[in-house]
Length: 181
Image (tube, rainbow, N blue to C red; front, side, top):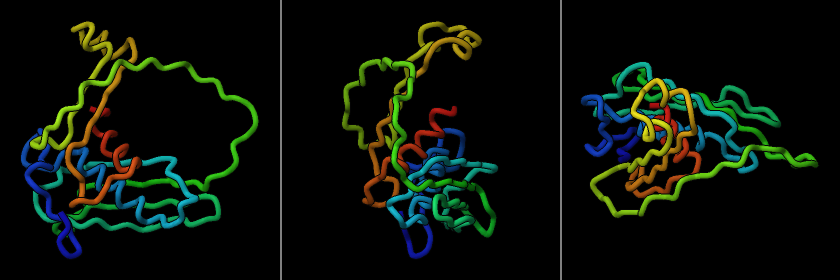
């Protein structure tokens, strides 16, 4: 939740690896911050890189952003999560100006997704994760990491910041940590 110029994590934001914020919460907060640093709707996110060099404690934090490059066709933004004067997480994002699509059709392999799970109301959870793919079909870890498509379905059940609606970009930033695990 927001408090003056900083954020105060709630207990629901705790990660599963000890007394620290979940990586998906930190990534979502960084995604939220870089997106707000770009005030032109003609720019769309093209890349987000999040680094979590140390745990983010369950205590107040600040988020700082700065625009590194502001050009006609691109904006490069960086953000940092700071606690007690130390950077505990950082991100850089590249935004590109929207343009006309070229003529022609781009081929891509068709993707067949499994059916979505039943949506359940779960107010005690921050995020609900379901996975499908090779590791569920074969218990051998080597095989699971090598063969077959894998799918993850995520459902955020709580807002990231107060009652502010989440954008698709913030949701993707949050999902990035979950799917990287």
